[in-house]
Length: 264
Length: 290
Ligand SMILES: Nc1ncnc2c1ncn2[C@@H]1O[C@H](COP(=O)(O)OP(=O)(O)OP(=O)(O)O)[C@@H](O)[C@H]1O
Ligand SMILES: [Mg+2]
Image (cartoon, rainbow over all chains, first blue to last red; front, side, top):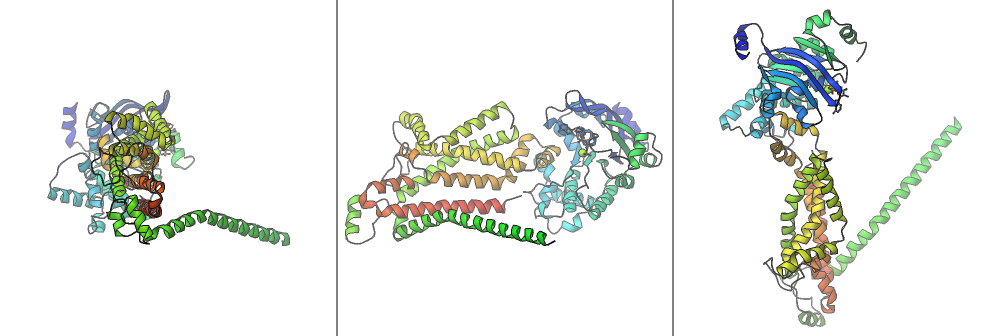
């Protein structure tokens, strides 16, 4: 299995993350996510769309096993990251490979911008030399287009930045660990249109190096930045194909209705 | 149209009257505080000189002679000051780590059975009259050790601080956004690392404020110390010996007519100490707010 994937390396885009029959429930017998099957392509942006409460966040958070914080949540099926089932791996290892960005920017309030970017190293006890640290900070902040804005105030608290800058700092914090995939749950929904646009442009840059799975409420955002799109409804993955197709020629009636603004 | 403006006007008057009443009444509540401070200041300021802080309590005879000669009472409260510092320090060393751990437990597992138990014990402890705490520590520490001691006093004060620290830790941690913990865990950090290096530092302001308030609360405790530390007329650094404390000295001065002149200055000093701690706590709470 793993060998097969290795040989696929030079085919246009190989799949880095695969959901196999994934179901998730908060309460016994009620499935918030039902039998989802999907494969996410490497170095692409995949958008998850759907009306409120359809299970987008639930599905996204299963990838880095955030659900384990809440013992009542049950996850079944397989979630393969680079061919290995994350549900069988060590949770901390999974989380280092799958970075997460939250809806509200949440830089660590007691840490400087510099420390925030390095938080993943610091909290995991990964030792890096001073010069490596500087390098990681600069590279990560450049990746999210924040370097020029903050390079003279790296030692200031992250919480002094604007909302959009804070969110980019949080993305830099996730990127710094060089994860295999970035999970983003409506990362721009708390931001103004200009800050949102900046992040969208930045995501298109990030895609050259990272795989991004992004939940969004904003259809035009999905259309602008994503390569593939999932449409979820009542916990089911109704439709999953390349974004172009899903917007111009949806297969399912519910997708069409949602995209034409008839519900949601 | 006309009735409308009249209604508006009468409503405006009602608002004004109500607002005035609130101001006057809240002014009344401030009166006792002002009176207390004024009274203590008026009666106590004269004795607050350098030797008040550096010398031990005078004996009755010296004091009487000085008063008869029209002088200030010699000596001061150094023995009580040292005792209070030592005992509060011991109480902090005991109560803060235990209280913070218990507070973490309560905020992390609010629903669990064990947390329920901890919470009831803390509530019970907080509701227990301080003299009863003194009695219990007398039985647990003074009796077995065979002597009154600053150590026993420190433990009694720790018992009084504990519920306050638990409560403030729990409240502070609960106020942190849940996304902070998730952000830490999402980076692959272990649970304990996230608590130690993300949550506790973020809660520092609240925790520190809670500790200061708890200190200022036990600084004035007298009854439990009577049954544990007992009091001493000289400076005592050995925590296994009986020890004085500022409030204990007020009580001793009260019982000796010749030393009555020191009651007010000691009270003034204690009051200032506690007020300072409270103000400091407020400032820190404001400054470290996140
Ligand atoms: N903590 C929880 N406890 C119980 N049920 C939950 C919990 N969180 C979510 N659910 C349920 O799971 C379903 C999916 O929720 P989820 O948060 O994944 O939706 P979503 O698509 O992300 O919605 P939104 O667009 O509003 O963020 C919903 O029906 C919701 O009621
Ligand atoms: Mg959601």
